[in-house]
Length: 534
Image 1 (cartoon, rainbow, N blue to C red):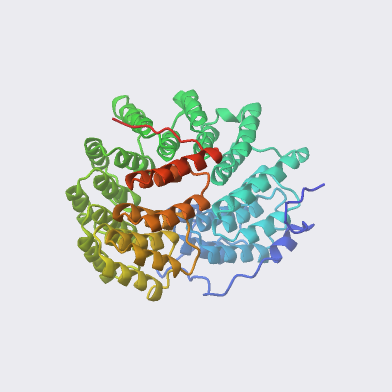
Image 2 (cartoon, helix red, strand yellow):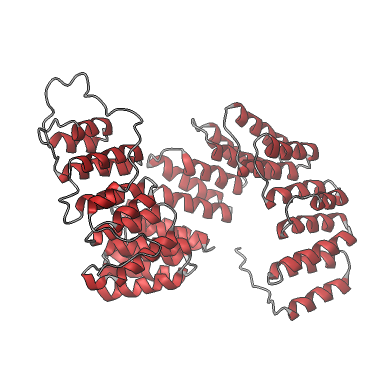
């Protein structure tokens, strides 16, 4: 008896039938010819394995499909080597060529243990062709834990975490067939639970891991730490981290540091970074922070505005030879800006050879937040001159800069550019920025008219911007209207009640203050206590 996956097509009785149901590979180009320097057959199979390890997909594909090995049907292991390389490269077209060759040589017909079919499922999943992966899986006459893992991984890598969990549940239902989850299965499904924020499912998986002893695996333990951190159960993540002790690796530290930062436990994140640095440097452990952990720590430092610690981390990055690119250099710019040191932020930015749109946006944002709106505009124009195309975040940073410097005309100009030149539909945050730009310059009535002309229904962020403008310029009538809209849209948000109450108190409207507090009590909303770091 076979277990049917939710939404899956009926399983075929033969592997070849399922494989043949896939679309034929497009004839983008003929298979590559042998390199000109090749005067004799390449030794086989050692050469194919070496080519794959070296990442030489072109020659590996030629050797596999040309018959140079002297056999009509290559060994399955050869297909496995090439398919692994195809998966790593996300080279879907080349993968389909390999699949077609396996069909033509009949290699799939004798694939009784599902080795080759599983490799194909894995390859299609990594190449983003999850429907093809599933169709192959459905046609397998016998499924192993490896084939189940390949399908779970296919959905996970395609961003379909919910489907990955459903496949896992189907696998559990098929346990009577002798297929039980292993550590790789649990690690993958825990990642899916974390992505979905499904702590309940994560706890179920934890229970199974404890029952089977798989929780002792560092791979599973790290996945559990990451799942609990992403599901806002940081205390559980920290307890697991402490329990892991000598089994910790860099992934363990990454998971718990990132979890601390994401959950607001900034001081703990910094403490953990110091611990892992000392652990690697002073005790010669084979563990050191990687770029993922460093980015998280830089975010934490920016939140604390501790410039000295930021410089220490920057020095650590330089000493360890981390490449100054991507998220790491962007986080350094954000950190120095957050710590009030624009000179260092500029130095990092100017010293980066390859600047992508994310780095430009970070620098525009930093410059604008420090009140240098015109410089931020100049940076944006310089970015355009490089040929880079701005995205939603780029325009959001630019509009924030215009807002902080009261550049009304520039704000209108770039809002128009965003919509008409780059065809980007503004987010609520972009509209809120325009309201703030008008409001900061004292044009509260104009800001209200702008809201009325919005093509979408304004949300709380827009009304909050108008309320802030009314607070500064003492526009009582508009403040009341904005406050009512804000509380109507988010009646359970205590921060809104406190904001509205404070605005009315500053205006001396004590009757309105009393009314807001009464309304807050009637809604059963309690003021949350906040933590102040001295």
